[in-house]
Image (cartoon, rainbow, N blue to C red; front, side, top):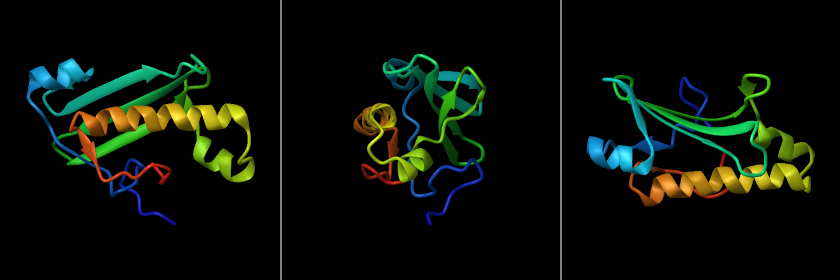
Length: 118
């Protein structure tokens, strides 16, 4: 069992706030003075999105995968436990890990190792 923050994201995942210019170059939008938001649709299914919200005042990060058709979390990690060879879910996992790596490589998040609970 992994410890999660109040947004149900692995509490080992932390963030760095870069300059406003760099955050925007990476693809974040500043929603207000207290929040940065990154959003991308997955290529394997345009109805599923990767979302990363950084709450500056709370010092918390919320990383979630959303089923946009139903407006709820798409818990691919739980689905993989029951169907570890389901090709579609494996594709979702790979794309999510790709976005995590992108954010890590750009210095925004850290503390996540490939395959760990997000």
